[in-house]
Length: 288
Image (cartoon, rainbow, N blue to C red; front, side, top):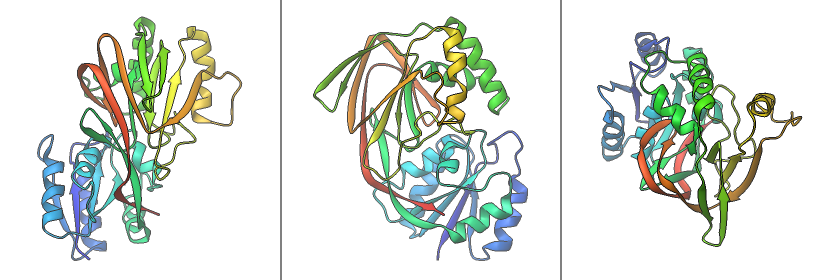
């Protein structure tokens, strides 16, 4: 079987690119290994892999690198594998990749099977885990500007942003028939369950159900948001519920003026309209 490993040597906060390369060479004697050199490079490498007949493309990187490579595999028979190499590792956790152990992560590739999964599409670009507008998109833009990775700086930025964040009034057409007016702290469209680091924004979401979970975090006092925060890490804990959920296949979002959004944690330029849809059975993912 032809396997290509794509490694982002700059992903994560404790990069182990050299160690991973040696582990791959030990366990996959006939695999090919390439390193990304710049933003967008992973997508080109994955597209070339499809043309060259690779059965699997395994990406070691954060959610942004994974998104790049996966976007090139939409509608092909080449399966995407993941080795957790980022900070939050949202999609990696969703497909049960071992964390913090490269030996186990590589072994997991052997044990995994290709499963035909859904993808999302937002204004012509793909996402595979979570997309959203509101506070999380604002945080993603701020987080992209700092060099320190990990959840601690992420939450620090999040706390700073929430103190000054003003929720926009949003109009949401869901499945072309339901108009909803929202004033969201965050509005999420989830294919997978979590952002990363076990922060489960959509605990009922599934990669294979042909739908996206639209999750609305209600505008609330800071004390209520603080009390509701633990429920995102322990979904069975509902002492203070601050979300509303529904399943959709497509949605159109407009706000008063332009707004920022993110795809798989990657910040996107402001827009005045966001069109979201699910693409059922769009990509093969290696899942153990």
